[in-house]
Length: 287
Figure: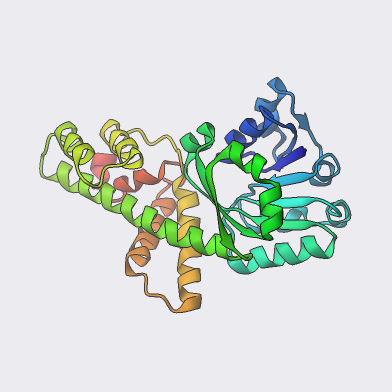
């Protein structure tokens, strides 16, 4: 099966590299320099999104936002869609995912949505969790590909249900991350030994591989991104919109949305999502 991948950003690159180790791969990115890691692999580098389609049977997309998708939906691209399967792994609105599904099917292709849960390290390890939606038979057909980039690809239902699952999952993840950052802020303010505090958290009932990683980053003040604040803020916006559409109350997410918006406005957008800790810290301590 010939595979394509479009969108070689923070998450797309490790996902595509895993696919390149197992399948004939063609990649494309708007900024050509992002293709450099693939020059040392057997992957082909395409000049246009349409070229990826022509050289592939199944194409994964991990573009930044809806505007990035609209930018590639030209006639050359849609003409190349017939008989192809598109799997969108990025987080967009449910309405836009349904629009993509309609456009792909109208052109004679097939569409699946599979937003993923996990940051760069799980992406590198092929241990993401995929929330799959669309035609079940097509989902089963592409399962060998999904096994290369996920530890589980859970079928959630029709188009839209994968994203709804992603939004509910990320509400838990984002509010938990903000709570972890706030607890470290209190620990520092109280003059605690943060290494000892970290050991307590790591031994406690809420400890996980994720929390241990983020605790270690806060102690080391290592804000290099595994999942960036700007991306997290975009997700809070999507979660807020999704909640509003169904009339769900999300007071914790409302607070997190404001915190991450503040972090982006203060220039922390490229930092790891746990760097929300810096928004809670007095400015003189951030120097």
